[in-house]
Length: 224
Image (cartoon, rainbow, N blue to C red; front, side, top):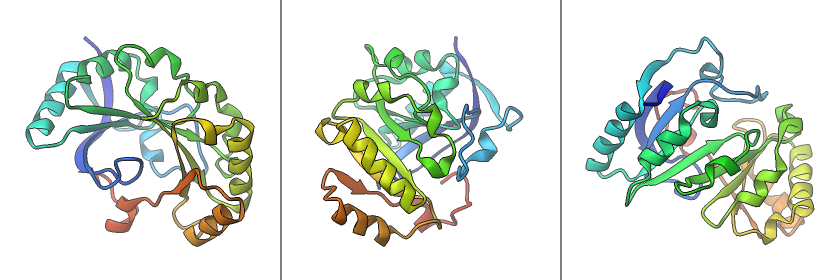
């Protein structure tokens, strides 16, 4: 049976993405292969991050209890959840009728191995210059995406906006069925500037995404 390093689990609303505003069970795992400059969960990324050792059965029990409470979205996040060695087993175990399993992934892990029979919904970051991690992006992941998936560009500067528009053009992301989001780094750039850029570049294929959980609760608060 698979084992995992679980940093926390909780029920809240999805703060971003295609199901923003809907209740979801969040399973957050420790460990990440990137160190983004603006990361808001750095506490979960380090090797010595606090965690609870759990099994696949433990996590499916948590999911079943959430479903009984009317929660049918499950978000696997981190850190980078796809680095958990038994994550494929967990994805398969959670893949049950009426349950939507979403992976929030950082764009630096290949998606193809997870795109088989028990395929989850992928929300994939593309790290832009302000992150300091763009060199690790696997653009071949764009070829795996379908109409249920999303690409999220986390925007911290005008330079990031320019690069995001360039990536959309180079990889013709506007022609793919996935949803494209521009998400401002909280406190680094005004959403109005992003809107003006979208108008200027005629980016009707992009949605502005604000992190609802940081508007509802203290931006530093965990477990929400």
